[in-house]
Length: 328
Image 1 (cartoon, rainbow, N blue to C red):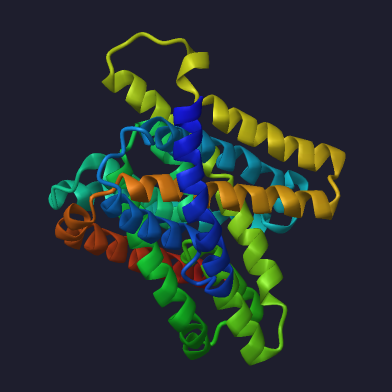
Image 2 (image 1 turned 45 degrees about the vertical axis):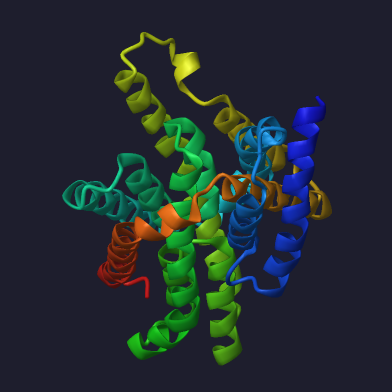
């Protein structure tokens, strides 16, 4: 218990300042700060044996807890009512991103797990999707850190240029909300881009973009289920269906149902969402500690290219489907 506690406290010591920095710089986000600080601290700790169990516990179990808590922020009734019209765009962008990431990762000889994490993170909901997918495909710390870093890069670019790009394309307020909600990776960057648009146009696009983004988050469920089945087949072990589906995803769905059925108070939901956010930051601190920064930099070019192509493909498809369905 003491060895687990020591590692947890180290991660907590990194997560708290990362959380604070993330609030000051939301476009970058707490998870990225946690990974960066974790990598720095990891280089300073020469002997990690006494912290190893706690760090592993945080990177695995706390990461799964973060996904479960994320479910409390999803009111399925509201999402289905308001986000239904965005489904064609969401399904198209997710499908294109996953196909592109699969083909390009094969062509560039990028490790399969890194390719999956970048594809899922680009198409669904950034760090949250990576957090949900990583335990299912048994990705290691460096693969997770690589994917988070790639997603972060294009989050920042999207938040900075998409409002102006939307203006150039003549998007309506509703059109830009749908564009930001489907073409920007992470929630913080969706908020930043939509808020910038609202500042330029005096609109309430943030509400639309947020609902679209939450609707995208539901894709975590089928994606992780399919990946779990694929992983089970790869292992060549006969497993019952109950053992294939990751239980923490089932709890994620249950949390969404609880919020929907019992109409949880907004304050309670906000607290649970904040806890989810902090747990992700805590887990990223642990992942940062176990990440070899030198190796990460050396192997970073191909995943960045993969992330860029996925990002461009999603943006183009989002606009194309909107134009085809006259939603923009």
